[in-house]
Length: 135
Figure (cartoon, rainbow, N blue to C red):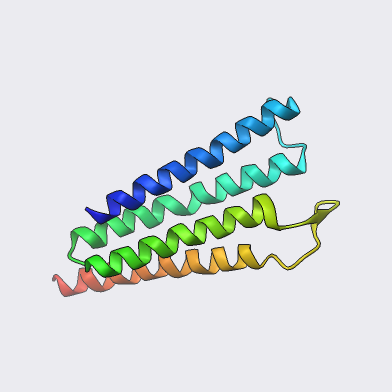
């Protein structure tokens, strides 16, 4: 089952993003809250991942179980993983801020979100069309 592989990869990515927050909280001695910009960015990288990934994985699994090709599942899985890497990289490393405002073009975040939306739209449309073709 191919979607299971992507669920595993994305699960590990979620743990890495979560540990990143814990390490920063300990280093900065911030147990609760997000008064630090670095902590806020890490929380949003993890939170955004947690908001979009479950929908994608559920739909990927469902279209796989309903006969979508191995190639299609892998293309969508790889693209989604890359999209989430781009987005996290943007928030954690690439973007520069002054007084909480971004000072450079957030190209990696834009690429990450556009690709994320494209993948979720794709699995959603495949699910809809598959449901009609089976009735």
